[in-house]
Length: 257
Length: 257
Image (tube, rainbow over all chains, first blue to last red):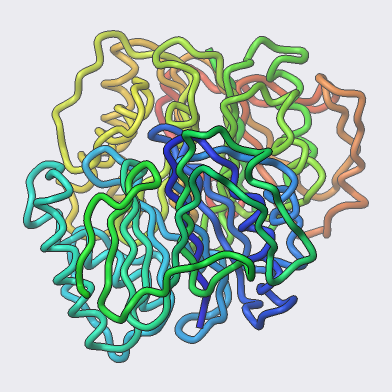
């Protein structure tokens, strides 16, 4: 299994605090030693850092923790391999361009005997996760000639996730930089932080941040993770089948309850 | 104008030496302050570092110089913007998946009034360079249903480059991780290093490397750059229209002379 980390915010926000907690699980407090990756949107650009090494040992991960990259949409992942060797090509998140935007995807779970119809997008590595991402984009592409509104796209997206969930475990995060979609098959949690901000204490590292000192009163920052990352805040636990589409830190649409 | 850096090698080789020279031109000895990027293939995976900041000031560039990533195919670029704002989405190299491989592209030059036919691949940013890359991939895709042998692909590739060259300046590097294609419209140089290796001295930084101590007798490493990076070796200067397809550090095919 793997762990997911997502962020949606209404102002460019750094995710160093949450990332620091997640990275400890990559071979430190957790067993996810088989690589990690994180993608930060900067406008329409996507800054992607990945390493097939354990995150606790990764020099690139140390750079990301030291270097506060600000973004309104982030997707991160740490990996404990089940399908596919430990290699860069098998490291999440995966990226493809669709309709002139970078789409970024990470998956937690596994799909048994997953062999989707070949389509335009093809996996580069050999994970079930990247195969599912390509299949998802192929479905969207064959349904819409041009970028649809999120409302129109959601039924196709949710139906695909439901189908994948029937083949195993499919918790995922997907973003095109404008919105961030989260789907829970078995395990996912979320929190929305807004004024009045308080302190937060990481479960996995000896670190407390006073968000009040780091933010302005209008900031809205939502974090989505496989398990709660802090132990002094109230995280909402997703139900199986529950999904949320986020934009600017707020819930744009949700369902599956 | 911008500067290009490419490498093709028969064993995974670090490019720290050449990259250190190139980075000095990003706001140090050269005027290319508008971002930089470098992509390293690791197997079928591609490790991409980019920054819209000047490379001499970039913490990510310092990491890349400190951290010897070994690769058999590398494409790097430093940018002096002419078309498109300074932003991550406009920073080379550009990447797309085609036929289950990561294709990576960087361009030096500009194309006047370039408005290619819309196709499957669409630019995310607003540079002429990314538009040309998408057009190139759209042409390949519409010509071949599946990945062709390099021999079959080259006429399509070279014809497209000739056409772009007719619209302005089009020096480029393109790779799918297996081979690396280099095309000269106005300015490109190359060197192949093999045994007996000697010392090399960077033009742009006070640095000499004794490749003899760093390599084995069977290593073949070719470096392609806008201008020679060392001042004590014999670089070959490409002629306008000249192209070379590299694999494992060797010339696989060449033409346009």
